[in-house]
Length: 337
Image 1 (spheres, rainbow, N blue to C red):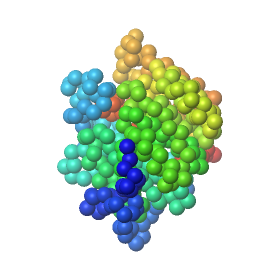
Image 2 (cartoon, rainbow, N blue to C red; image 1 turned 60 degrees about the vertical axis):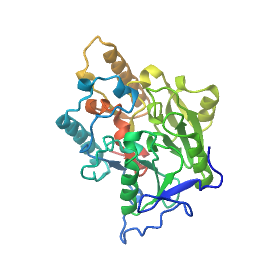
Image 3 (cartoon, rainbow, N blue to C red; image 1 turned 90 degrees about the horizontal axis):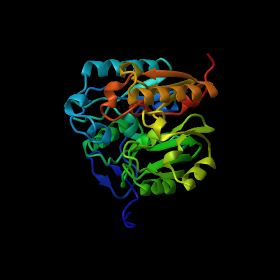
Image 4 (cartoon, rainbow, N blue to C red; image 1 turned 90 degrees about the vertical axis):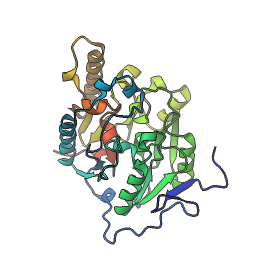
């Protein structure tokens, strides 16, 4: 519950303490701060896997693996990251998040959880930084605040739990879908609606294998959204149908990461390690089915599907969308080739 006497949104001060008088940070932005969200090309935030490891399991995917299965091949992880980075940077701008030396933040590479730029606000200069429920990730909050302050953004840290863009999907204008129940709290979205003039359709998450919203919902265009309706109530489905056309996918299709996609202009990006799986196994069958469904969706909507092997990051219970934070929504514009 929210204490009505306390501020609904708190900001982190330069010393890492919450401010109770004003929800915005009174830090002087750099004199020549360059707001990357204003660029007219797709712009993203990624983080090189310099601190990435899987030593502390913090989701059910990791818990299902033993220590040997979960061990990361650092060189392979670097190559996989580089392939995705090169593709995105050749079609837009990719800002790399500096990794503090010896920070020990095993999941910092998953920038979609770091926060979200509130692009519906005209200035596009406000970032909500995550207040993590996952204990190994709590230290990422300070990293996010310091980085975005240095880039000239106003940074807000909610007083209730919230795990970034992975939990809050922007459809268009001030319309969003927010997931709560496992890593984020419903009260967070109520605060956002009041302070930032947002309309948020709130959906409850209960499947531990699909523990962030980006595992079950992906805005494909301004008009269409991929949704795993198996996980939603009838009321939630109707609320989503009122604001977007639903492309329905099953839980079986969502489990291998179908909704964990990123759109860049005419391209639809997703992760697939199909060539590392043994033919005839259940995992192979699920991966093939997911890829074929994505091919159909891409063909029906004028996209080209691009698949990336991110098997080392699956050991951390993550997928492609986890590694990319949007700094603007220009990637949702079709591009003439």
